Length: 214
Image 1: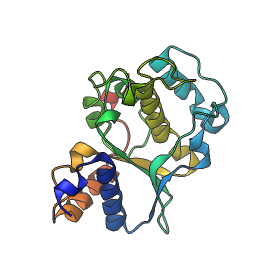
Image 2: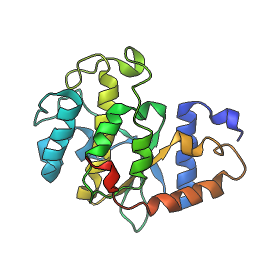
Image 3: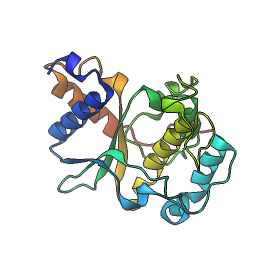
C-alpha cells in the first residue's frame, strides 16, 4: 500500500481502522454507534446533562432540547470489540475536526474525564477559524445548528458527546487518531510498528490535563 493510495480522507480513515484492528487484534464495526449515542438527550446523557447543555450553549447561545430531534442522529467511525476489555469508540479526525469550535468543547472537559488521546494536542490544533464558513463542511444543520457554519458546530458537539458519554456506559475512553499523526507513515512498510507505538502512547494519556479546562 503506497502513500498515494491513502491520501483521500476516507481512505486514510479505512487504513487507520485496519491498522488499529491489526495491532490490537480486535474487530472494529464501522459506521455505527451504540443506541445511547445516536440521539442522546437528557435521559441518555444522565449526570452529564448539565455539561452537555453548557457545551451546546457555549457553541450556539441556545438551549438544548431535552429530547434530541429525530434528524439529529449520528454514527461514529468505528466501535472496537475485544474478547475481554470493554468496547471502545474509535474516531479518525481529519482537518475539519480541528477549529475554534472544537477548541471550545475541549476546554470545557472536566479534569476527571478519561481520554485515549492527548487533549492538549487536540486543543493546540483547534485554535483557528474553520477553513470554510459556508457551503459543504459549513452548511447550516437545523434544527440544532441552523445558522451558516452549523456543520462545524454540529461536528464539534458530536465529537464532545463521543468523548464524554462512553465511560458512563461501560465503554473504554474514546480513541482519537488525527490525520496529522499518521500521514507521514500510514502508507509505508513500517506502518504497523508506528501504529503500535502510537497506541501505546494514547492508551497512557489518561485524563484531561488542567491546561485544557476553562
